[in-house]
Each structure stands twice: as C-alpha cells, then as structure tokens.
Image 1 (cartoon, rainbow, N blue to C red):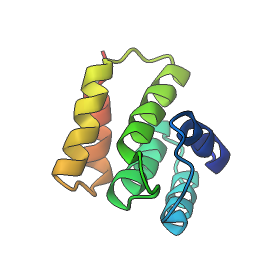
Image 2: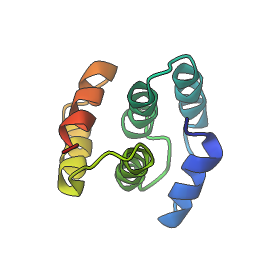
Image 3: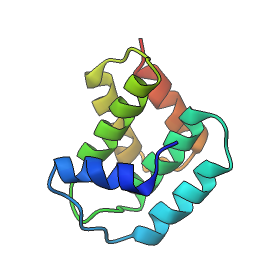
Length: 110
C-alpha cells in the first residue's frame, strides 16, 4: 500500500511537493487502508490527488507516475499513453466514483 512518504517522493521527482489539500490525501490514505484490493487503494489516492487537487501544481503528472509505479510494482503491463488518457478522463469528467476510476486504470493495462 502506498504511504504518504511514497507519494511525496514521487511528487519530488517533478519538483512538486507543496500540498494545498493535505487533509484530502490523509482521508484517501485512511480509506485505502480499509481495503485489501490494491487497485481500489490506488483509486482512492488518485481521486484525491486529481479531484481534490492535493498539490499546488503537477497533480496530473504525479497521478500518472503513481499509477505507473503501482502497476509496475504489481508486475502488470500497461500502456503509458492509456494511463495518460485515464488521468485526463478522470479530470475532464470530474469522476469521483472509485469503480469508474478503477475501470479506467484497468483499461490502461495490457
């Protein structure tokens, strides 16, 4: 399961560490801890970052990197362009449904 420090390390890769909605990330991490399914855990975190704008800047890049890191950690093949499309769709459609976010992440796998 992703921890706050893991997320901040990825954000630092993009020189984006300034959080403006830390409580949303804390809530997402708490919700994720109550689930055993890694994909559902990831969806909670991605929803918080993209929809609640956890970071001042770079939320899309951070989310894409988190999704790819999680998929690699699970040894799951994915299409990086499909990950990008999934992140864009979540934002454009303002998706809050964990099920729909999970579906988009699954669609990015091969």
